[in-house]
Image (tube, rainbow, N blue to C red):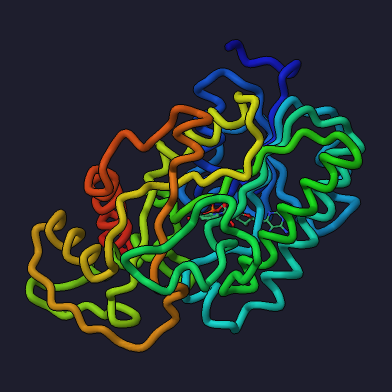
Length: 328
Ligand code: NAD
């Protein structure tokens, strides 16, 4: 594919973790890309052809950014963070308002401008809490999302926006693809400051720990999750947008692990002994795992690498950040 303004792509949230990687992937695939975000990518610049610093909560700004019938729009912009940010309850009002405003503006302007395809980044947080109580047997099959009972306001906003985009498909013919991401991780993610997610937070704690030191893990550590490496996520997302299936569909891994086990795995990769100290903290649901039956059957996709392999690529990057910060 040759870079061509005839096939322009817009990435919203292009300064964030997944957005930064997506812009890289689209550029290396040869596309012309405009990125938009409140901020530039934190680690190095963007390789987008144009990078617009803009607030998508503002409808006029949103209209200016969507100034043509983009071939593809990836809507990743959201008020986002890890458990400490999303599940403490302290940020609920802002999370709901900020992300809902972005999506309300985006759907209207994409529809008005005649955007050909829109991808919306939803989340595993849409799934009902009542199916995620047993840490060994969570149910996150796509159709289990109703009757709805997400355990966070972040999840409720994602579900509302899924419905909003789907309503624009029904009433205005907007072509929308919805992926429900399950804990994406990798280099260039938030790793400090309160918005980091669990793999990055544990990598940082292990990188900072002396050998045999204690590291703190929120909850009893028996809560379970699965994690998907960023490159796998991009592959699944792009396959979806190039398919005839529109979702909603899980984009995740089925390699479920408890958080204490995750800490031990990261310590093993780091070559360190650690002691785990479980402390009270926001943990979200008790168990969660991606159900990949639908994506396997519709897109023929499954992750190609293990969790360990992804962590072996992520831990050294976080270690570098920790060392650079100490030296600064
Ligand atoms: P991120 O926080 O790194 O990226 C989101 C970006 O949106 C940030 O750069 C932020 O500045 C930008 N943004 C926020 N408000 C904005 C506004 N008003 N105008 C313009 N830009 C704004 O998060 P991420 O991990 O890259 O996630 C990308 C998307 O995927 C989000 O929608 C998130 O909810 C969803 N998701 C991510 C995960 C995950 O594990 N990373 C899991 C489920 C869903």
